[in-house]
Length: 306
Image 1 (cartoon, rainbow, N blue to C red):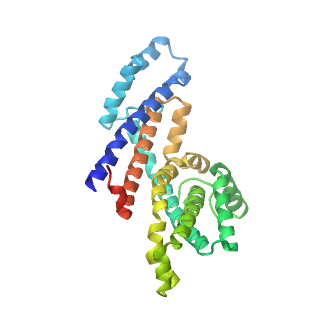
Image 2: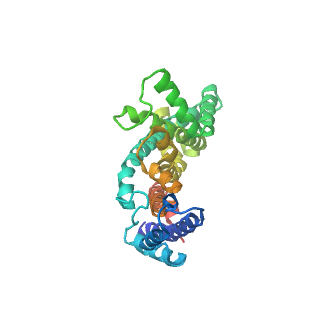
């Protein structure tokens, strides 16, 4: 298991390096610069600013300097929020993004697994078709459509929930539901397909022949192997929910990392954009690593790496 974990950990390092290189050179290739909004400054002052941030150095030298700083955990100062470092901005916004992302993935797993199992146990019946139709609808509707609809119904018409902002649990309901709906649909479809296959297995037929009640067969024998595809999906899904909250945070006015990413990209705040990209990329690798370990525990066959 240790060899398996080390192999998975080491394969993530080159992936992260490629991500950092691509993000670094793409953001530098974009038109505009971090001081374009300050063109009223004399050229010599702008030159001094570029020298202070090492923007006057060759690009390869800037990239090497950035890699060395990131290796020390230093993402540098923000060009836009000059009184803060990028690290301070990320840690200020991450709790908000993490809270709504964690609640969304928890809601998606609970509802998605229950709906998928319910549909599998009623295969090809009306309930099965209804659940799969709802799942297809959930997959098809993007967040930027779901969020305004929820605001219109629950904040404007019914006035049950606040339209946005930061506050108690009522402020989290619509952002969490918006993020969770597509994931509920995906997990329900995965669970339904896997559960149908498991219920046709020989060991399930044996359990039924022994007269075991259906809840015992499902919970004790069928659910664990049926959840393997769901577990493998949870790594990228969790990262996607947290990183995909950029649109949701903007719509509901939440001060998460997504807000800093959007404003940083619009203002060519190189260090802020790179910091968020590297942070998100690291999160995706960490979640995938955790899922690989959990998958290896649930199915020991995949630990036998060549």
